[in-house]
Amino acid sequence: MTKRFENLTTLLNHNPKLRDAFFQKFQGKTEYLSILESTISFFAHTHGKMLIAKIKVTSTLKKFDSLISELNTAKIFAQKGCEIHLLPDDYFKSASPDILCKCHNFSFYVEVTQLSDSEPTLKIIEELREILRKNRFDVRIEFNDKLSPPRFSGKERQEQEKILEKSMEQFKKELELLPLGVTDHEIITDGIKFSLSYSGGKSGIPCSFMSSYKFPEELFEKYVTYRLLEKAKKREAFEGPERNRPYIVTFVSENISIDDLDFKDLLFGHTMTLLVFPFEDPEITRLATIKREKDWAEILDNKDKHIFKWQEIEAAANRGWHDFLTAIHYIPHDYTYLSKEGLFLSDPLIKNVSGILLIRKSSESYFYPNPFCDEEISISNFQNFFI
Image (tube, rainbow, N blue to C red; front, side, top):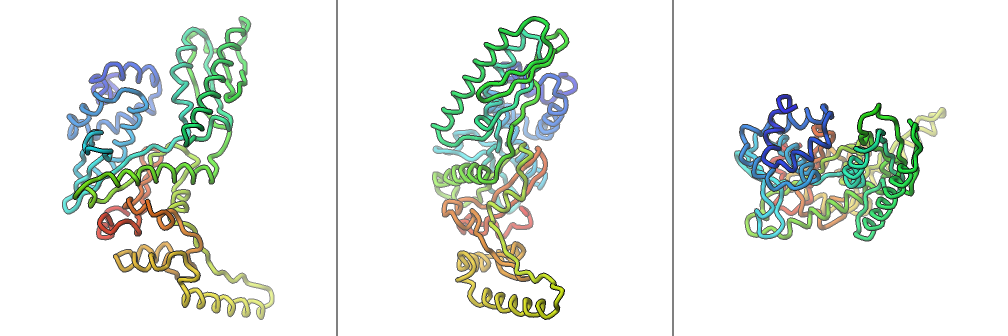
């Protein structure tokens, strides 16, 4: 394994405790290990000292996962020609961003956050692995809607913790009572369904983890908004000229039920198109067309009345965003106009953010610029670089 994943192993050797926990958890997960090896290899020769400094202070697998998210983000900007600096937590006196990117004519900060609904998975996988060392079952677990959704407040998380702990206790008690010779069995607890299958005489392992629900739109909006506002507020502690550097927030997501359209709708809102459907009677079609022209003229003549925060849209257009705002129909054309504002326009705190980067499945990336951010961090002059 060490030869096949040489750069990954060499890096982890600088933190033996983390290395042992990592390979214990991911032994045999060759596809995932290959992805990590590729990411580490990209930086191994050019940023080796930086990686070693980071790995030495990475105390848990969860923090290592966060480091990989930072590297996946940094890789995207490095491939665009940026000089990359992974920043320590104490880079600023107060909260620090994760990455500083320097290009030939500008530089910017990047804050990285993971978008995941798998907190319970991270909390029980080590405990479950330890239990299965002494058993002969492979276990697939499925979280119900008590444990699947991410939680926001401390109270919500504590309630989820209690359900998780109770489910694990229920699982352990029923597992101990299983008669000899059982090969397949289901254990259903308050929050988890455990599906057991005989491991063939060797020590068992945790297998796949599933959720019993699709990430609902309202929960997605609440979760991403919560995390985005949290990261946007971070810039308020930046001091002096550091506040004038563009500030990009990245969401790294392995959640297949979340895609770029979800982000686009949340950040930019929704548009409406005035359509005329053909009728069998040509006269009805003609009258419908006349009405559309009248309604459209009313929208164009009274933008302040029909389009949310038109004055802010117009001001952003004059600051270099005219073509982009036209492309997304914030500037009305082709009978299409803004009907519901998105987060970029609705929350003043988002003015702290120059743009949002979404990274899916480690490599797919989508960028959403914020035309309404504070003028000193606007990326209007660098749209071709980001978009």
